[in-house]
Image (cartoon, rainbow, N blue to C red):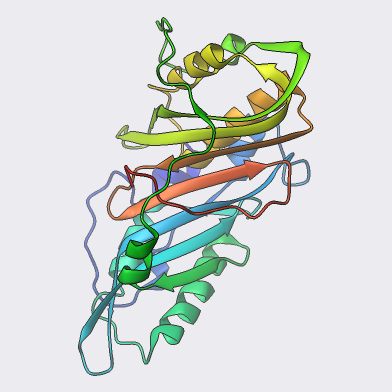
Length: 276
């Protein structure tokens, strides 16, 4: 378990407060998990963002009439802190009976509070349901590797030694899998997701990648660290000219978490998959 998470509301009985309470937000420093991966804030080999989408965002107009919307929050991958997910949900629920003059007032409040918790500016978009509905859902790019015939016997921890590549061939491709699963390091609840890999480098053996992804199945870690581990293991193997790894996780409690890590400064999409 992350040492700071022991003091978070995760896995504990919590009172749901329905009026604005920013103190509910619980930041967890990234440094401990970075150190586990051999990284520091100064040596991060990637750029990126964590997209959080809230499907249970509601507040009151000055008249007392409620509003519902979808919130999109983008937290920089190099921010000093992640925001513990249950505390994030409790904070968002504290808006339910809180009046705001208009949507812009709510948005500025969210930016202020979330940026203070993350330690870096957080992007906020409050979106109308009909706009998100019109966008629909998308498919991940490239080849899905889930139908490959593999044998698996180890699910307890990620096994980078399974990964193989052909160094004599340099390719540029996108592959993805919907078989990513890990567990919350505090509650042990399952986290279900889809993962995409886009790279230019030594040709990655697709079956070995699938075996590696499945090896996360009983591993306990936060979403962000799972993606960072996959990125680092592939970077060591492929020595790529460019590499992007991202995961789209299934929501829990109205929030989904979608970490992106890339060697490139790219415009990252926040498109919903069919399970989201």
